[in-house]
Image 1: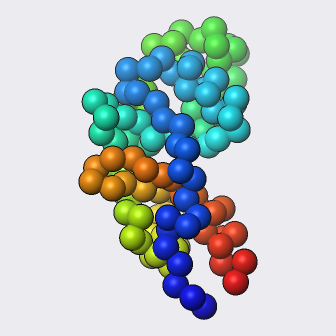
Image 2: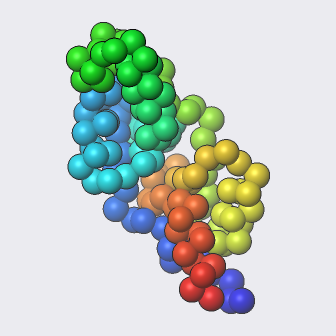
Length: 136
């Protein structure tokens, strides 16, 4: 199998959020673009990742207490910083698809931001990596 770079399969038009954005806007962005992982930025730097699963945990709590998510005082009181994962693993565009697969095989997350000189230039998911392997 020919070695391929992650830059060949990554999504280059990355939706991201600012750490100070309202959480409800994040849910709307995910729903609108049917995405499950959002890099969290602060002053142009990656500071975390927010996944649909992070928001689903709040949804489950709201369901349990009988509140609609959008009307929930719990949901309205949470910040992105409280919900996001802070210690984010990333790759550069020079990483190979095999390297990404190795990272995913040892991790509990399903997306990796791609950085060049601390600038967010892409994102790759387990789905992207599996599809690349299936192409070969």
